[in-house]
Length: 333
Ligand code: TXA
Ligand code: MG
Image (cartoon, rainbow, N blue to C red; front, side):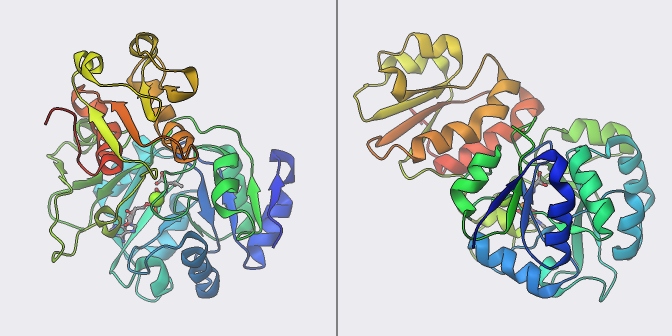
């Protein structure tokens, strides 16, 4: 199958492909998603196949507005209305009870809840509005690889497997949306993202819990995706929590480093062994997945050291993704 790259002016072509049941990747403010009509079981199943994703890991349903949610959610609780009013369109995914029979089991993985997301991206908004149906929107990467933050990342993973990619340039945030579960007594953040638990708690006016992600193999985790190895390049990743530790690492030509500009300047390695994460945490969020992909494609690199951040709730999302990429492996710990 030829994978077409569409520009912003060609979204009608992308809508036509989706309407026919084909798979088209689309930009959002977080990462690129892999779209297919959420109500067509065959198309939804093709998304799992293209990504190589385990079938018990449910998909996000991407909508153009709250009215679309009403057709597929059992009900919209007050809490959800508050969050939608404040954060949508934006990088917040909300878990609600699904209206029985409204969506194929393949979307929800057979669970009684469904995750709704309304991205802050005009192009994607227009795409869904024109289609008239929500689209599923898992990250458009091969399962276990870092999520794609450019159309080129998507092409790298899925060329020949999907009908098209809409190129909207590099995504703004670079890490996936915050997921909050509102199907439970106390709201809980299942996956940290740009919107922090504190911001959610402020808008809701009540306590918000944070899922630590520690689940044993026997347990069924609330967000099934949490149990899988993720984001990992082929070489092992080590988190460097203390910036002073960069001077203690034994550098050789098969080592890669991902760090902010100032730290990188002092590292005695050739430029191609270094990946610049930028100047601060926000830039590092934006660049993390690109860096992991950069080293994944360099087969001569045998170990990758990546700068950690300790900035409270602001660094929760970055450290969550980095810890997964590293399999929990930290320097000096
Ligand atoms: O920013 C994002 O959310 C991106 C963009 C493309 O929208 N999408 C994304 O989708 O990250 P995905 O499939 O890569 O991650 C969604 C996570 C998975 O860990 C999945 O297990 C969880 O959401 N999830 C989806 N539906 C769920 C449900 N009904 N109950 C619990 N977890 C759910
Ligand atoms: Mg994903």
